[in-house]
Image (cartoon, rainbow over the protein chains, first blue to last red):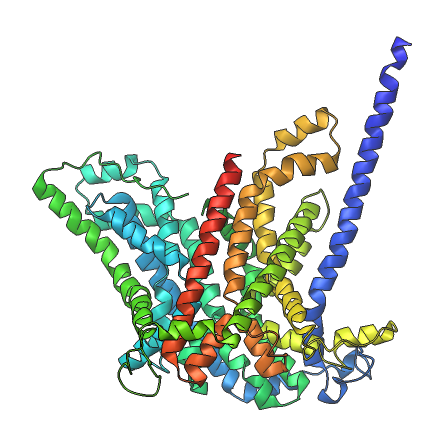
Length: 294
Length: 309
């Protein structure tokens, strides 16, 4: 009897094991269906953009146009690109997002460093003043900000698009948290050497902060590239529009040419999709680390 | 979460002269950011508050007539204010649970030892990097009657078509579906990261004790993900209450039923920029801001109490 005592347990264990691997396969199946559902809208947009216009509204829908794969055409893409607007919007988006990202990185890291590493009087007040800004949703400021930009003569200018997006308190908070978490020995050695605080910031701390710079930088770039409401409010001239704002107007300019509309949607989404494909790991890690530490 | 006192006053002498130099240095580090912060965040907050007490117009010059609190009084009897406020809240109530549960579920599934995890991350996260207008254009196209992908499949299955965009009963749900599709990847990635933080040994210990994988999920994984869940919910509530882009674009470019979906920020935009009543629009944003504050404080207290419990 005693020798058999272990037997039922083993069976039980292997049953658990089998049950577990079954669950894993089930999980895989469910996820696969979900992932395909998630990809369908994107694929459908691409397929529509590649179809000849006449075939976009067939019922029932077809994934491959009449005439097979060879009937796919880039015509709509050329059409949309040669119409001009899109290239200009790419430029506007790239310019404004780049300036915003560089400015945010510089200003918020300086402020984060000052608040974390320089024991000046009043820093607690300054810190809380900046943190308070985190609870102000940018959307509620569109009216007074527009009035302010109007008074400054910045409506329909790059300054108008850029300036308000630089005042981002989150970056200060993230940099301060990062600088708080690093031991002091390095800095003390440099102070003994008589290095100025700015040199300490620039030559010791910024190189250490590389992962945070990447995270804040990628975030700021994506958010400003995709910002819709502010450029939409401050820009009325088609030539000054960014990608998201410009695309919101294409439905009216292309009428019911669905292949053209989808081609411009695909082209509008493409830059960040490409960035995402190349920097997938950094982006995901950036979101994860800032998210979990914040 | 917020830790002050990172700068210990170790090596610095605190003679008045030295302290003054430190004050100056600190001030210089913070100043460049503060200039932008005060000019483009603090000042508009104050300016908006001031505007809300005047009959201020976008087209006229000056402040217009002083009205006291009558802009605020008008709000309470404006049915469009209440309906648009309700739409923002309804949108939040529908979006946040769906987004949280689906992203948690997908992350739990993806966390099992399954092949091709990169593929799942890619397909869930890719929509998140699209601009709102691209997302809106794609879903307007998906929701078309007749030749729209969804309705075409519904008809082929022998079901009747749904007027996704124009039916007032359905329009809000259509926006919610599109938004969950768009935003899910972000919460999914946060949950995947949260799952990585859970120590392996806990699972090994549970396995030794003979816990089934469902029990492990229920009693170890989900409780330990609480911090992530609070973060996911907070960010989603904030973003949803302030919804503007997708509803605005889907109604102006896609004929989405406007009366049943117009959000509060859309109504603010409309009052300010199409009717030029910026004073009234500003008053609206402040009432809304107080509401957002109440929600955040309640959420904060609630999550702290639960953490202690």
